[in-house]
Amino acid sequence: MTAETSQTLDRGLRVLKLLADTDHGLTVTELSNKLGVNRTVVYRLLATLEQHALVRRDLGGRARVGLGVLRLGRQVHPLVREAALPALRALAEDIGATAHLTLVDGAEALAVAVVEPTWTDYHVAYRAGFRHPLDRGAAGKAILAARQGSYTEARCTLTHGELEAGASGAAAALVGVTGIEGSVGVVMLADSVPERVGPRVVDAAREVADALR
Image 1: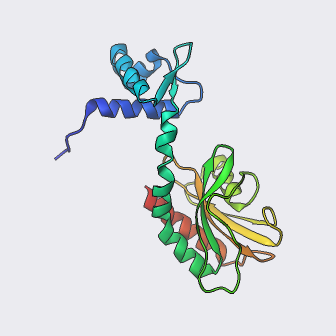
Image 2: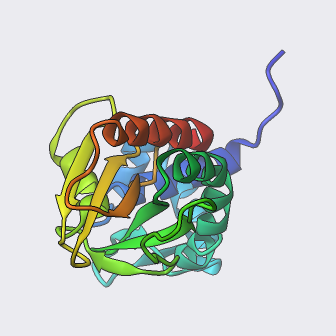
C-alpha cells in the first residue's frame, strides 16, 4: 500500500532540488517544463518558497536557491556527525590514529567530526572545526579525486606533511551519498602510512556512506 503524500510539498521539494543543481537559476517556463506543470502552479510554488527565504528571484526573473537554505544546512552537520561517529570510533581504535569526517564548505574542507584513539601514547591533535584548502591534505584531495572520477567505489588518497610537519594522512571520499561531499580519513605522526591503513579507511568511508544513505 502506497503511503499518502502531499503533491504540493513534493513539487516544492522538486523545485528546490532543480535549483540546487544549477548555478545560473531557472525561469518559470524552465521549471514548468521540468516539473510538467503549468506556469501558474510554478508561480505559486515560488511565491511560497520565497516567503520562507528558500528561493529568491533576480531582476531577470530567474529563480535561485535562497539564503534560508543555509539556516537549514546548519542543522545538517550534527546529523551527519552522529551518523559517522560509530565508524570513526572503530577506525581510530583499530588504527591507533586520529580519525575524522570532513565535508566540503565552499572552497574549503571542514572537519565536522573527530575521534582520537584512547590507547595510544601520542597522536595528532586534530579538532572539529579545522579548515584547510581542498587541494591540501588527504581529506580534501580525496574529495577532489571523487569529483574528477566516475568510479562508484571509495578509493584511498595518501599525503605527507601537507598540513602538519611530520604527519601523514589517508582519506577516502564518501561515494554515492546524494547532496553530501565529504571524506573519512586518519592522520598520524609517521613518515608514511602503513599499508593496512588504506583499505581500513576505505571500509570506514563505505560504512559512513551507508549510514547516510
